[in-house]
Length: 154
Image (cartoon, rainbow, N blue to C red; front, side):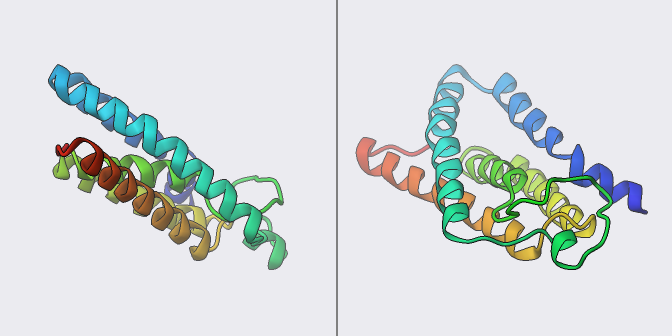
């Protein structure tokens, strides 16, 4: 069972990237343009808010606090927020505005990665939960600003 969570913690996030690339590939030219613009705006914003959150709050990783060997090797740095979940949350949230079915698959992957990273001992639930919240809020902000500026929907 440990191997399933190790895979989830280390590699499963790649499937979300592939899912977004697949959607891009099968979309119309107009949808592709909108998706690229949305991602160009939301991904850096999500990352920057994550960096700001990391500067404001330090949360040592579980294996440091509880003194155990994690199932996945990791540096003993600040675990807040989870970079993996910032990316997965940003991709999943972006897809909410383009294809809800694909978004639901991406959210499923994100939740499993979140649970996996907690299970293997490199994040607390606060780290992964905050990452998802940051990503979702940033995507909603980008969507709201886009709609307000252009008076159009995705």
